[in-house]
Image (cartoon, rainbow, N blue to C red; front, side, top):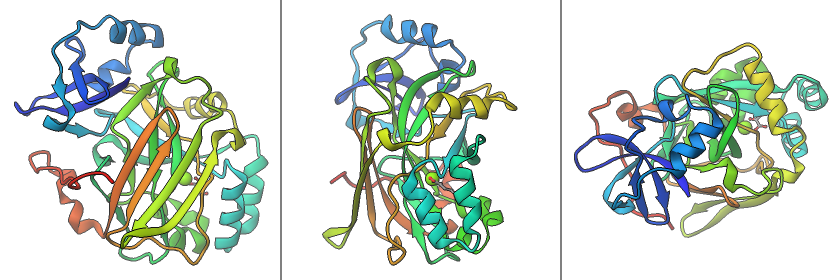
Length: 303
Ligand code: DO4
Ligand code: MG
């Protein structure tokens, strides 16, 4: 089961429960913000006691990013050994990354407000002024306003290695830009995941009919606990409409790889979901993000 936000034929935005190819609306819940204002126990009973409506076919609705209102996406960084090594290779300031990997305080940064998010089958963006860009496939925890982990989703923390590599103080510019944050459209409820610290993550970048990059990892090699990351995030901030915290990447291509326009990035996290996006360059193709009345562009179909 996945919790989804979607727009139906009547243009109303709803929240529902997706089971395979059918979505059943949650009639008592108008937004993800409302859902994330509930305690974990109340959220579960709201979802499980929802009336069994007729349901609509997934193909007849527009799936939207699973966050709204004042929701935010934050990311943790350098939480896998591979990420520490890759940052040290790309950066002019190696020791910053070496130290943060073992420091008590994790690296956490704001990645995106809800309105800038893209979701499955929509385009992702890379910066026109970068030249060295990577997708970062990350397990993301969905946290309610009470600081409880209520679900999991897939995040692509698209990043400019060129800009971050020059100086770590450029991280906000390397991380937050048009189309730079994609979340899969479904939230897998926490009660359905056996062990979030033992999930396989795979990523393939498809280019011109073949794989330009493929890699895999497991959350078993994540160096920090999910609850510690969430606790640090909540120490000095409230999240009245919930927050999604992506937990860092354990897959980083070699330095000779960069994303190109037209690449299709496909990420899969065991039990959690899949996320597929096609790359565009520059902010001009993302005007629809700031205009609620614009149609959201979608790829024809997933691979
Ligand atoms: O330190 C920069 C960010 C690293 C990151 O995003 C990651 O490890 O996933
Ligand atoms: Mg990352």
